[in-house]
Image (tube, rainbow, N blue to C red):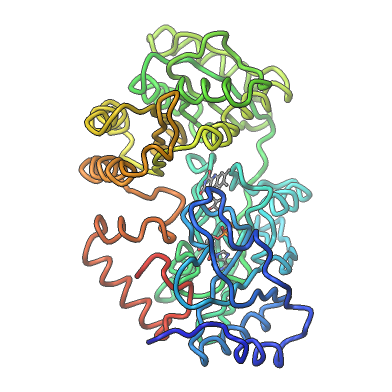
Length: 470
Ligand SMILES: Cc1cc2nc3c(=O)[nH]c(=O)nc-3n(C[C@H](O)[C@H](O)[C@H](O)COP(=O)(O)OP(=O)(O)OC[C@H]3O[C@@H](n4cnc5c(N)ncnc54)[C@H](O)[C@@H]3O)c2cc1C
C-alpha cells in the first residue's frame, strides 16, 4: 500500500478531530537521535493526553494511509524514533501520558502510562519500598513505552531480566485505532497468542503502547559494589561463575570494562576520579543486593579472597560508602559519553553465548586488523553476554577519515558474531540502522513470520514505516 505525507489537508482533518493543545511545532529534538546518524522529518507533531486520543490519531492516519512514528524519550540508538526518508509522517509523542495509574504493593505491580520517564517509574516503586529494576544510563530521559517498545536491557538483566521480563500486561492501540485493554496483573495467563510479547520489542511497528502493568521486586536491604582487576576475559567469566556460586541471585550486575574505556575517560573527562593509577587491561564492576542480615562488603571481600587464591583477580576495591559506590558506577556509566566524544567508526551492540565471549574478544581484533589500524573499546554487560564492541580511529585520525571502512568493519564483526551463534542486536533493537543486518542474519522462517504478522496487524504499513522491516 502506498503511504502519503501528513500534508495540510490531513493535518486539517487531525486538527478538526482533536483539541488544538495537542499540536505544537516540531522542535529539532524530535528529528535528531543521540549519535547524530539520522535527521528525521515530520509532517506534524501530536502529543496526545490519553489513550482515546492516540486511537483517534491512528484511526485517521490509517484511513488516510499516513505513516506514524511513535516517540518516547528519543534516546534510542538505532534510529527507530527518526524517519529520515519517505513521506513526512505524524510524530506521535507520548510525553504527556505520564501518570502512574496505580500501585499494588501486595502484588508487586505498578501500572504506568507509556510516557512516564523510567527514573520516575523507579521513584514511584521506591516510594512503596519496592524496586523497579530496569536500569540504564538514559533512564533520566527514556520513557517506559520506549523501553518496552525496544525491549530494553541495561545493567540488571543478569538478575531481573530485560523489559519483557518485567512486564505483565499492556494497554496499546493497534494500527486501525482499536484499543487493546490488556493491563493484566496476572503471572499466569495462557489464553492463546501473547499479544503483549509481540508488541514488546516491536519498536512501534505494530502499534502504540499507551500503558503497562510492570513487575516490581523487593528492594534489597543492603547493596554493595566492587571493582576487581582480572587477568583476562576468561578469568572474568570464571569469576562470574564463582560469584554466582557464592551469592546466587544476589549478583545484580556484572560489567566488563577494558583499559581503552578508562583511557578515553582520562582523555575526554579528566575530572573523573579513576580508581587505579594505571588503567588495568581488564576489570569488572560487580554489584550485589542482599537481604537483611547480610553484609555486602564482607560478601565481596570473601569473593575477592577466594578469587585471588584461584588466580582469577589481581587487584580490587570494595566500596565502603554510597559515595564510593556511585563513583564506581559513574566510571561505567560515563564510558559511553567519553566514547561519543572520541567518535566511533563503528559501534556494535552484540550478544554471545556466555562461554563464547572470551574467544570473540580474542578473534575480534584479528578480523578488524585485516581492514586497518583501529582502537577497540569492548565493554558492557558480561553477566548476560551483551558486549558493546566499538571501534575507534587511532590517535591523530577521526571517524570521518574512515567512512569507507565503516561498513566493512560492521560486516566482519557481525559475521563473527553470527558464526559464533550470537545476536547482532542484543538490547538496542533494529530500528532503521540494522534493517540490512536483520535481513542478512535473521532466520528466514522467522523473517517470513515477522512479515506476515506485520501485514496482518498493519496492512497499510502506517506504523513506523522503514523501521525493523523494509
Ligand atoms: C547514554 C545511553 C545509554 C543507553 N543504555 C542502554 C542500555 O544500557 N540498555 C538498553 O537497552 N538501551 C540503552 N540505550 C538505548 C535507549 O535508551 C533505549 O533503547 C530506550 O529503551 C529507548 O527509550 P525511549 O523512550 O528513549 O524511546 P525512543 O528513542 O523514543 O524510541 C525507541 C523506539 O521505540 C518506539 N516507541 C517509543 N515509544 C513507543 C510507544 N509508546 N509505543 C510503541 N513504540 C514506541 C519508537 O518508535 C522507536 O522505534 C541507551 C541510550 C543512551 C543514549
